Length: 152
Image: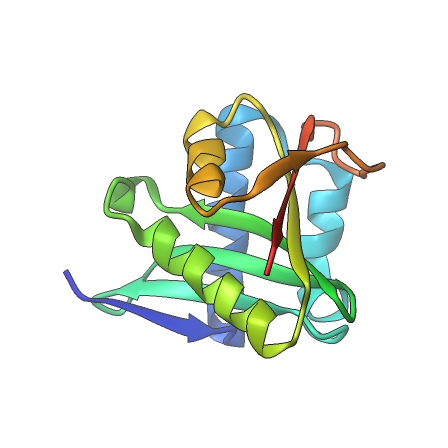
């Protein structure tokens, strides 16, 4: 297996949406705010200074993650998804590494995320990278019941 990380390319936009809808529909439901992001990826994530990364395995999109700029010092890691057939191959580690490298290059002080306590494997991944639980800020997502932060 040869995994490659790349930055956002518009030809992979539909894979970003499909991968995220798959896990959302498996564990929760696609919320209005998710649809807003999917319909306006450039305006919501990219144009304000964020990025979307894709992990390709033999040319196929296997996973994705977004970094949304909150402000000059904070980025939110969001929409981390790995295709079921590629899960268990540590691709999420490559995606988180890309997010951390991106934030450091932008001189960010921290990365934050919101998640759900139902997503134990994801929370274990974040804890492995030393993300710490913090009080949950107001969020647009009904499923979010935990917030975590990583100081860089």
